[in-house]
Length: 442
Image 1 (tube, one colour):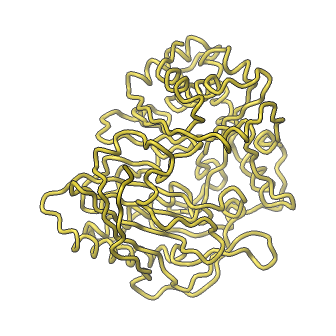
Image 2 (tube, rainbow, N blue to C red; image 1 turned 90 degrees about the vertical axis):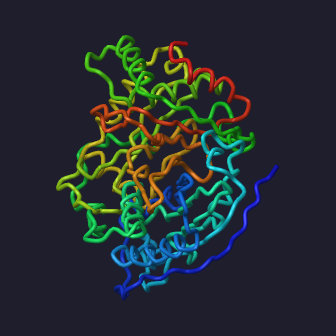
């Protein structure tokens, strides 16, 4: 039976204090074609004791107005530059959208993957499909669940901030709602020129594989467009990570231990490829986000909330990826990570800002995004930490999500040990994918 949801209020929230009236340029990385969409988070909070819903909604709305003062570009509107060279933000204090709603869903429903990709769509009922047509840069929806819990849906124009930047904003916003006072760190920094092309071209073109198109030998895109996608969700805890590391090391020529991200990415990629039953000569790519704040020279300032990531690219034929063991796939991921340095980043910046405005192709591609590293699991609006963090809609992007009450430490590779992996795969492949991803020795 379909869930019932009702919007109680929908308003535009403007900054609580005067903010600069200006037009700010977005960087070449911000302006690239494949970031012109809305990134949508879903945070689910457990029932609280004696929660005053009206007071909480008022407090959250007021905190949003306060947070939009230091982060005033998030109250603006994105548009193309007149010369077509990129994007810019018109800052006139236009505001963000705040929605309060009620739903007959319960917190327990979010322990598992949704039954279909748009099942949780009403938890962020204003979906901005075109981010360049005067749409709000930020949309927030607070939905009260039937058991007293709450769901917070948040949409960000991805052209304005990346995952780390949006999480920093959310933690500032939440701290204000929780009644915390004082100066919040990090303070937001604009400085988008730091991710623009420089006068000196990169000496190496080691990023070329990212934008190279591969032949579609199997109707790859038609399959993902025409066949219904089924969401999946699998949790890997410390024991699973240790097993995967041992397996990868025993099947690799490398002598140093892999990180949890390397083995988990390799394992999910192999399972996905094997489940899809693709031709052996089809070329596949694994693209994954790499934070470059500390990989460029000089490093970006603390509080830089623009897009400061590039995509690492691992590539293999189906035959090699599926017939060779986990150590091969994890090794490809490691080498792809190691290629991302100053020259690689500058090469990507030049490619996405040139006349061709290069953008990654989708044929044979699985994209991994590491939400488990953003700090979304710490976003506390005074209702405690979220018991679920994920996307509003599950799709073919593979997300590594934080797991609530995870007592595991970081593995040294910047990746928390317990991770929930969520990805939607074609219905014809879902059973095989779930079998393989839960069977690392197969």
